[in-house]
Image 1 (cartoon, helix red, strand yellow):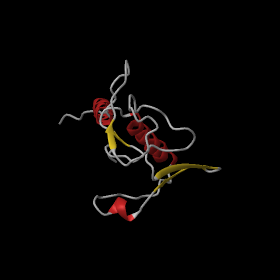
Image 2 (spheres, rainbow, N blue to C red; image 1 turned 120 degrees about the vertical axis):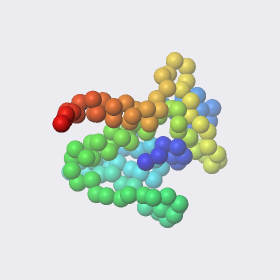
Image 3 (tube, helix red, strand yellow; image 1 turned 90 degrees about the vertical axis):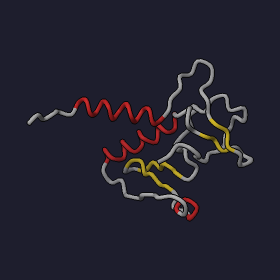
Length: 128
């Protein structure tokens, strides 16, 4: 997934901070939803033609609970990105997100790089 160009209408046209949360079950992507059912959350992403024409998309069922939790955590990282994200305004224009005031910059790719480094440090090394 790519956090740049996500399409969600901004409620703050001055765009002082894009780190706001969405109420209930709304995901940061306008065509992605998390539906809560008695069996747990169901992630639904749009497969409309505009989403598939100019890029590669992978669609898989998330049947395993651990995989679903990981997917939601990944979406949450993108949701909190206030450095590389662009918000689509009601008029269709895009505005770049910036940290506001004393808010720390949170770039999603840095979060994933740090997680990969931590994982690599925990993997046992085998010496021949």
